[in-house]
Image (tube, rainbow, N blue to C red):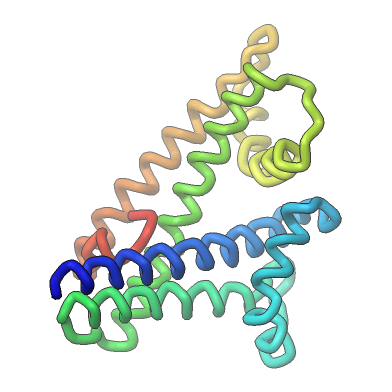
Length: 195
């Protein structure tokens, strides 16, 4: 019986985390104003629209921030935490604690996404320099708003871009802070993806 519970827990975590990642990517793509006609953007819009579109009628955006998508991401993270706790045999946390845990999980997921996106850009700049691919274009559009301020801090070194080092240092600082905040509010790292 424990094996069935573990399998159910694994499947619930996987499905919710994959959909949560799609919703968070949609939020990031809207924030950076990525090319809407990119096939990857079209795919993300198509799979997340059934959940987000009805909320957009109720929750208006705040400037560049699509609050309906953010609310869906927070609710998905909270649902995932609740299902993991229930399937593990624990009680549900208080609403405020659940919201704090969900917000920390989303920030952790976003930070991890940018770590791997920038790492991917570094590798692809060595391997596929000048290649045209929808994924590469999208990766550039997502990482450039984060990388540009750091590029302005460092002078050019003959074609060598050291700005990712500064970004990785900042990402590590944020991850350390998130782990300490999570421990302070009683969030176990296994409850959320990203911390």
